[in-house]
Image (cartoon, rainbow, N blue to C red; front, side):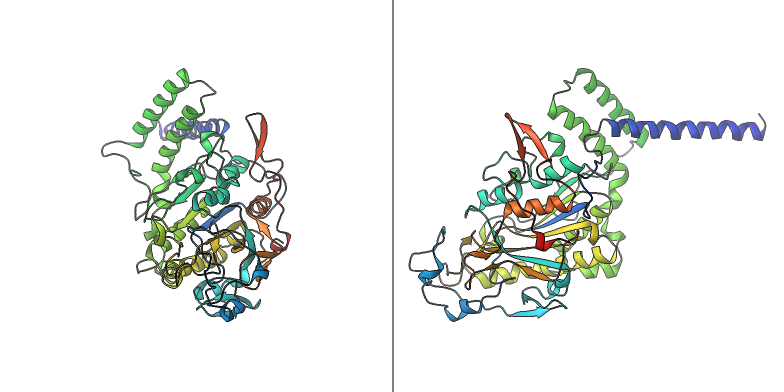
Length: 463
């Protein structure tokens, strides 16, 4: 064979290999329930990062200044403010003043607590919602409601609803990930993040705390990629030969095998923070305490968004009581510690997304399952409080530099433009181009929705 013939034959062979690979990818996509879907209407956001402050951060220590609370500190709550249900507040409890200092920041002049000096620098990109409320004052039920809009487990989380509606932009990474706190599980457990009655394909991928969030990303010693591909093809062939098309769990397992292979080929780079510059690591507080852990997870969330991951939850707080934002015994000690772990990483995430051109397409949500009581629990703590608290949004078409709604003069109850969790969910869906009525799923004879169709878009928060 002469040189011309050899090159011609070789090129045809390479072309055949490329065609085979493309046809395989198209076949996978055709059978992939997570393939990207069109928005119901044009909207700016493509992905969500939920910064979950588990345990319930206090509204009056963070984003909702209440000078009158300081003036009335040590006195019983005046009757004109009404009543609220608590878990551990005594009937003769006195109001507890706030030791934190609030200052105006940015061009907008929104007031932010000195707990968050870094976040305060980003306030012009943030819309603080000071008038949030929910239905329950216990952790588990409130966490279920925060994630799924319902008070009991078994219903899909907002992350699962989002990927059910939009699919995934990445074929080599999970579409919905949870980055848990290393201190342990929360009261509602893994079901609050789960897919509920949606097909198992829409379940979250729970990453591991620490420096290796995903185990076994490397191929086993002595195994090549073609050998691993052949193994998976055989497994899929056997599964397809015996599978019931309606077997949701088996179909999800088959899809998981395929995703695992793709992660072994492409995901190691996504999880390798050593590829970041020293300046970026410093920005997030990686490599020093107390910001290293939460900084790593926020940075990883940004890297995942860059690679098409649709929904990420970065949890602050885990394990029992005081390891969360659950300041029953000492609000100062708890919130200073928790804020010192999260403030710089959160601000770094907003800054990094913005400078990379990702903030416009990434909706960032910050908050917990409720707030804290104006009254003291004991002498220095605050109890759970669900009838008035703060959350915030940034990016994804949100109009930053404003405080929306209000609680009363002591931070007890949402009084001006009150917004339920359902309204937060509806706004999140709206910014992703998902209509709350159209995003439904048949379950036990009815069309179920995340928002029960009762939610309203928080119009003041969006462009």
